[in-house]
Image (cartoon, rainbow, N blue to C red; front, side, top):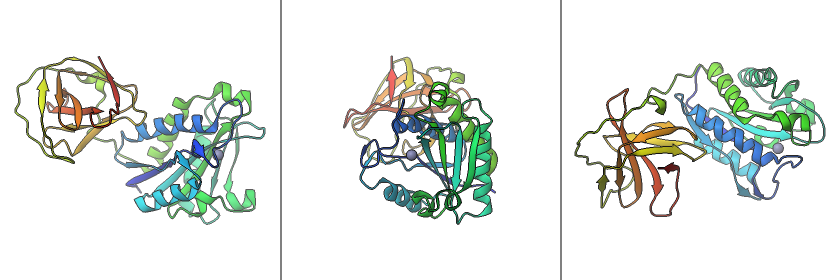
Length: 293
Ligand SMILES: [Zn+2]
């Protein structure tokens, strides 16, 4: 039993209507911390991750469900934090869930409850049995769906010990184990990537037409700053993604390439011997995904 696509929903919009719980911390801050790390971690595995987080909306739940349903995702995971007094983790699945989904919900809930960050387990149950109604995102997504409440925003015990890294790592491990996901063979830890200079003619086509291509022999360290990480590409076609690095990781590059669209850094992979290209800045809108020195 494995899956091809996972939809991750980070709860509520940050602006618009229904912006989530606010206590000592804001729900929308904390579920995004966890969600962005979870996506970066899942990218290390052989699964496509669909980000179904809606940042601005007056109807975010419908939009999130539509994005998930349109994507053909196999499973939908919605990340929330609780409010109203209490402590620990709880997880819900739909009244209409199949056994597989119920099993996933129980695994995620018990794995999280076993961390010091989110113990104890408050409950893992059918939404109708607990609330007396169906939770919107569980009822309106067509795939297996679970909703996790990652502690309480208004309880200092939970906010003091909150650790998005441990929560994301635990959830990633639960999902990987449950679906038996394989590692992404293109993913290489950048700490294991020394560089050596090469001379290589390079022509490529991809998602856009490369014009005004120029290469420079710049060397340095490039640290990924985008919470979602950055994809890199191999020699044969910048348009084809070969793997990714996650936020906070770094690479040593020895070449800088500019095109009409992007600025890339480039280096030789020690593990494959293939030159990699990673876009770090969009020249058309100034957007940056990494900090290069
Ligand atoms: Zn919520």
